Length: 280
Image: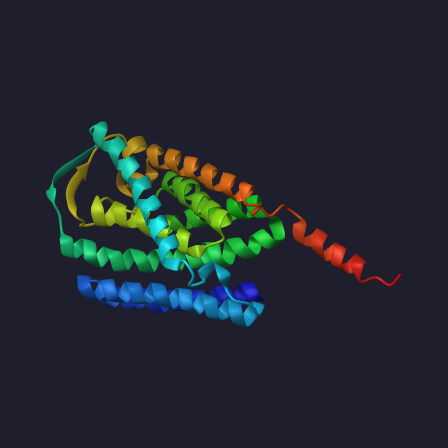
């Protein structure tokens, strides 16, 4: 039941924040404020519902080092997407025409912050974490990653390949980031950094959701395998390749730190506790 209550609580916060952002989306400054507020609301609700349903503090959103962890995540996300653009630019598939829209980029900060916080709390904080307790890290990573990717089939210009690419480069990678650090702040930062770089800096399509007006006025052309077509660069083999590499790095860190949960460990622990309480 804790999964149900946590999922529903975050979902309600997401719905409230989403409606508020949609109501002010024509005003970039209001979108910034409302988006950041929505992100804070989701994290607060998650911490509250974990405390109520599990009788403990939600350490993955602890205030300690929150800014530093989020900042490192943003740098990783921006760097990762920038690497994709560099490959597209050097191969002649991404061209900069000039400067774009500063106000548009400001609004996208709020919009992407709200989206990143909500999706990370929902998919990594609730779904991955609880499934991992029962099935282990690897199965939880695979299952939640696939669900995360398939969710993007609901987007305007979604494709099956794009959804599978998102599952690998984002669903798997962000779950691995959470497993390595046990921090939602870093995962939120990576997610935000990637999305903001894509939309707010390089003005590309994000997950098949249409054009964005960011800091650069740019155009893309070329084979869909490299550019992602109407789905955007997240459907590019470059994105998948870099996402796989970062996933492996995070899983290596998780192994090194002893954060990998083996399959069946919960049942073994329950059996051990049961045996320990048997009368002699």
